[in-house]
Length: 129
Image (cartoon, rainbow, N blue to C red; front, top):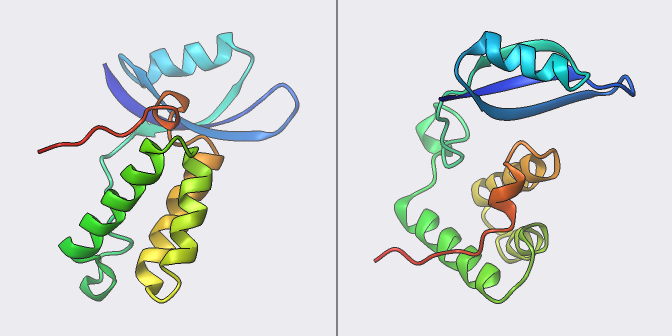
């Protein structure tokens, strides 16, 4: 199964975006239709890194910034703070770093639009050594 991003209209007439696993695009379209959605766009979800906001190297985060971000986020999540609250705290703490603040805002926006699967939002962090 592969990941596909989609844009569809729900029964209330609102546009929704998301990412789902499916065997192929046709299977995802049929699944969305069976749930009452009208698919507008279905494409293969390419693995995009949230850590590169553009192809311009001056907008890329350094390894140190990525390390600090993930460490602080893990600490907040381990303390039991929900993802959205953790990201808001991190945005306040990184006001002086525009690139990092933009990244955090982008992650927060995607989590609120549920482009980050719900099952990922409730997972507490796990330390990797």
